[in-house]
Image (cartoon, rainbow, N blue to C red):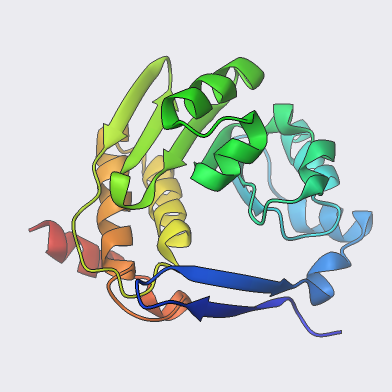
Length: 209
């Protein structure tokens, strides 16, 4: 069975529609999960999306080992109802994912709903051209988007996630983390492709001036 892959369609405005084939991603066993988590413990982090079979088990096992569980519930589907989301330390959401978890569509209502349902977790809510919010340690931060012409938004969320988690790992101030993640995403959406569009750290630093 081949590994999971996607087919991505992009319209003239840079927005995308994605078809996902799970493939081998849908086959990990409990033994596979134990092997993947071997050697990790408190102080480490695991980043998860809703793309692997047995993800609820992995989430629970990671939390039991003391890992920081960072979760992006993409793609949204009915399986999320069975996830132990109380194990999540950080939710990284877009509007669609936030609406799926809270039943709300207004950004402030999504943040309030997440705080009510998962009071121990921190939340990042990305809004595309409307920027992003971060709910952490009792504070709500807002990061405006950097204005660019969007060519392909496919990797925007992945880019934001990567730079956000990198900033956490480096102990950056939250304002700095949000700004750098937004800057990196603005570079990614300005060119075609998924992984190929994600900028290297030096490019982001150069864009910051």
